Image 1 (cartoon, rainbow, N blue to C red):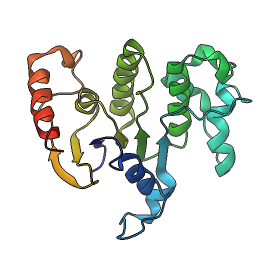
Image 2: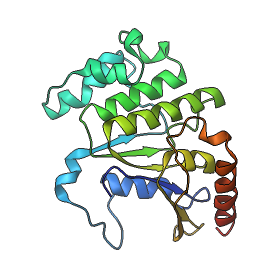
Image 3: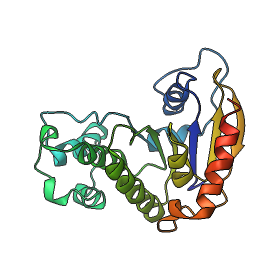
Length: 210
């Protein structure tokens, strides 16, 4: 669905990241098939668990890289500003915190204005405060830019905060359920409400079946 966010959760090693790479076209299925609009392939962005920034390029040059590779032009500054790095455009990756690196990675993925953004546990390596801030900033970005997303996470709370639908995989990689949170995930501090805790309990119960 357009402008929809889908989370994929499941036990470690069940193939969540592999599924994401299949959707991106990085891997080919050994059996079965993935059916998608061919025109979408050029409109897919990918954010890895690690920032994957090139260490010899500063924030601005890293963000410009997809444009150079595709022969396109765009206002890079607006994307850097959107992720909150306007004061750090000339810094190199070794000068950035973990949260800043992830912001730069997200800017680089958005610079081609993808219709679909794929994210592989983008916040898992961050400390709690940084992760909470980035989750809320990402919510704001998605609400503003109206792109669809599919992301892998081990955090059920994160899945609730960032998705309209949650796909639950078992240890064999089979989808055993789909969960649609009944909360307004864009509501400020929604994670501190009783409604959110009730949703989290229900999702945990569903996840235990994996």
